[in-house]
Structure formats: C-alpha cells, structure tokens
Image 1: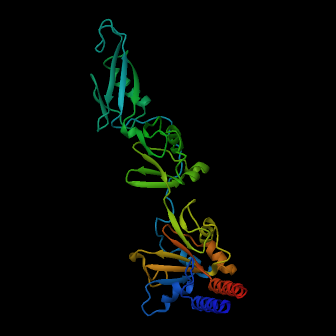
Image 2: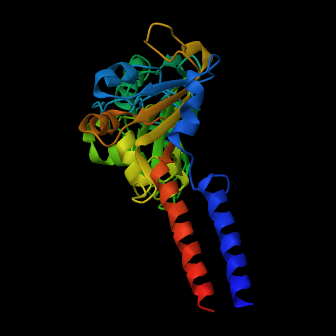
Length: 374
C-alpha cells in the first residue's frame, strides 16, 4: 500500500514539474523585456523602441516634453519703489485746512473740510470742489497731495491739504489658496513680495505635499516650487496690483511597475527627476527578480510632435530601454529626464523563472523522498 501511494505522489509531482518547466503556470511579478518588445520586429509595429545611450541622450533630450511644459516659468525679483501709486478704483480721503476769513471752503467756525472716500474714476480722476476733475492716477499720494494743494492756491491761498489713500482692486492682490488665511490683501507699496504675501496669509499649509506656488498675472501663469522660492532670493518676485497667488500641490507623477522596490504612483519630489533617481524613489530594483538589462520607460507623445528625421519620436508610443549593467547605460539613465505620466517598468529576469522552476522541482522531489519513507 505504501509503495502504491509513493508511486502516485511521484507521478503527480513529476506532472506538476513538467507543467512548470513549460512555463505555462509559473506565477510572475513582471513581464520579460523580450515579451514586451517582441512586437518591435513585426511588420506593423505600433510602438517605437529606443535604446538610450550616452551617444543619443543629447538628441532624445531635445524631443518634445510630455505631461507638462518641460520646466517651470517664473519671474525674477526686482526692486520696486517704496511708495504706492494711485490707481483707478482706489479711494482718496482729503482733509483741507483753511484759516482765512471768508473762506470758500470752510464756514466761520470751521477750520477744515473733510472729503472722505473719493473714488478714483476709471479715467483716473477725483472731483474736488472749485477744481472739478483732478487727474491723480499714476501719481504717488505725496505727488497727488502737492498737485491738489497747488491747484487750490489761486482760490484759497492759505489752504493746506492732507491726503490718505485706501487701496482698491488694482492696488490689491488675491491670496487664493494653500495658506492659513486666504483673502484679498492691499499692497502697502510697490515693493511687496511673494514671500511677504505668503507670510501675511499665515504661511503655506503644512499638509500640502510638494507645494507649488502659482502666480497669475494678466493672462499669464508663472510657477515655481515652494522650496526653490524659499532657498533662492532672486526668485522672490515683486507683486503688482490685481495679481493672484495660489499654493497647490505639485501633482506631477510617474508610475512604477514590475521588479522595483514598490509598485506605485510616485509624485515628483523636485522639479526634475532622472531615470536613475526614479528607480531610487521606488526602493531600487529587486535583487532577485529584476533584469538589469531590461529597465523600460513607457511614454506617449502627441501626434503633432512626430518626426521622421530623428528630431522627435517617429511613433506616438515609445519604449525607452536601459542597460544598467554597463557604465554607458548607467550614465545614460542618470541623464535621462522622466516626464509626468511616464511608466517605469523593471522587467523580470528569465533566470528568475528558471530558478523558481528548479526550486519547485527540488521541493517536489523532497516531498517524494518524504513520501518514500512513509
């Protein structure tokens, strides 16, 4: 009875081993590079395969960027005047002092005339009694005060003018999001900077991942990573009236798959990420599974960027391949820029499958040996 059981177990296990050797049922965590790239030799290939080396890296780096503009655009810092400038929509409050008897402006027991909240019109003027419309837009408050007082001199020689400015929309900026206290903030002068405004708003929210600062000015949008803004004083740009500032998360990402340390969506922790850096961010390659000659980057280009002269991709879908067993391949991976939306795929080594098969066969014969001793 024992011999029959042992013989049955042997036959069953040898059958499993034969099936495993055929590769039909072996579980794997990633595809082989040969399986992915086999279509490249077909007559109707639907994607392009580009082996990245130091020799062609410079050419590939000039191909159109995908997923974003290729780099952030920002304006450099510049020193502006410390005084404000009157703009349409501002409000001006005048106090006119006059001590003369029979004044045109004041009554017998009154020494001052208050004119609060005079709104600067769209044409840049305010109305002042006896002077009619006075052009003040584009002037500093001090210059506007002098102009009004000089204009009053022929009528009220002893008049003295005080002027206070309340900023309107064109002398204010909007701090929209990403800070503790968003809102509309008045510009105290023409030298108010981005960092000063962020500080007014209570600083960037600590919950934001990889914060990105966006400045909307007129019809243009400028962007810079917050850590770059904080570390480089030349990027602390001066604000203008009607600017809008937003702080948001940098949502650029790439996908890591296959025999990497982790299979996940990885957000860009810095402005630029190379292929070699992307592998480090995923925990590196699996020592026992990864094919160092089969690291792939999958990318899709817009149809309008296709070229036939090598200055751009020949097909919309391109697979870039890297051989990390050579210095040339390592240097190429260190210089190759990952674009948002790319997929990093570490293919599995064929030796791993063979090793797994023989491990299974070894376990099977171990079980047979155990059964023989029953």
